[in-house]
Length: 298
Image 1: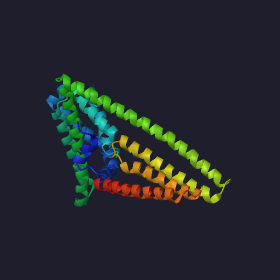
Image 2: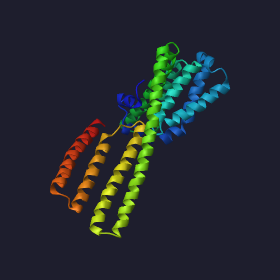
Image 3: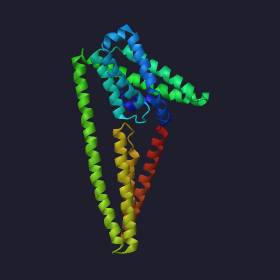
Image 4: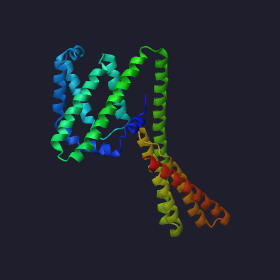
């Protein structure tokens, strides 16, 4: 199954789409009953659907879940947790025997009602069209993921090899997530050490040579800033964001800049300082190229 990052890229789901959906949250929350009632009436009026949802209490339970799913469409948090929740919906549908046709029809009903709501709330045709496009993207992605998860779960029942492959992939994903958490914890520990280093340098400002300790403390603060960027990058990656190589190159750049500052204060040899300056120049060019590439890919 495709990664959520790939799915969002294929549907051209951008940050602007996320912001539009968040802006619709209050409007849609106020009218969630309208959506739930329409689905409830459709299930009760469809014989084939009533065969799946055999009791009124079961239908009402499902409608509560639909309410939560609908509100979550406009949460603005479209990360791996959001992706996993949709996969679980597809897997549950296959387990209880909900035909994909019912999912397609339900999404169609939700889409039509949402478009009607937007027509009522937004007067400008141009602005309304932008919101409708973003709405269609999130609904299409939901349908794509739920249906794909349903089909994968169905194939597992027929193919032993596919089940084995799925288990290996799932184990690999779990191992990768655990490793990422360990990495974050390690970065937090190192950040604590850098905070101690900054504190020591600041303390020496008041006890040692002012000109030397200020520069050293500045270098430590730069490293602390980069460590925070590393932690934020890894957290964003866990949530489904892109992996930023530029942050790691930035660590090397800041470290070399700090070494240049300290070596200059220590009056090290000209050759050594020149080597450090050259390394800063080379890493700086690499950082600029990587950063530029990342910006172009957004």
